[in-house]
Length: 83
Image (tube, rainbow, N blue to C red):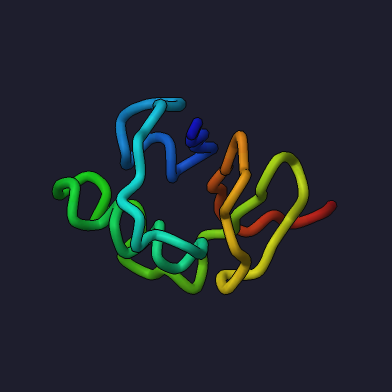
């Protein structure tokens, strides 16, 4: 599965994207964030306030409890403001 990071999430993780093989128990966006935080300090820092970071599955914004089965790409980004 491809993970893509935007804005300060990308800066904190230290990469724009990566391909990962997820453990079977990772079934939702929340599970994915929890798993990512175990991968190192940079991920812990990027997702330290998980309620702020938003996610999109295959370019569609989703809620944290969204299932990720069958997803090709999951993107993470901070909240956006208009102006």
